[in-house]
Length: 155
Image (tube, rainbow, N blue to C red; front, side):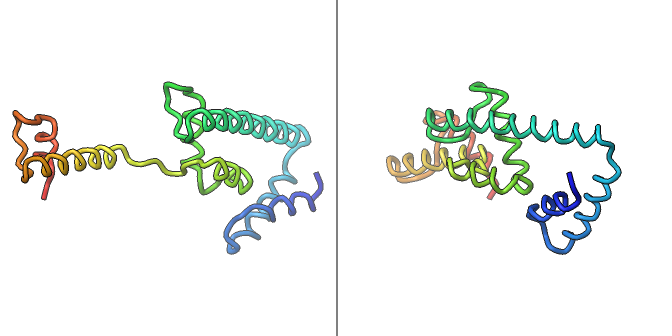
């Protein structure tokens, strides 16, 4: 790989302009210090990584077709589950093309917090209770789990 190619590759990286030149210089120094064997290994690893990413992405597309979302559950496919979580956690560093590909299939970059979902569900339950009884004083006898939830709320 020539110096110009390294510079072009660096230029494609979407980073803040302040430290762009510094990163390019560091990358070029690192490249120049590498042995031909290390360079070959680097390309091999990058190729394998790209192939693995593509393979997981294809699995995710199938999952999306079957389930209508990209929220893979661990019991469905642990490897795909961890891969999707890794994509979410590294959102800021995902390559632009990969980000766009995930976006295109409707990948949810953030998932609803389960506690928020539980609260929303309980709140809906409380609204129904209020409509039926005209108040929100749920007794243990009527609905123990809703009563417990309400007792844990700090006002």
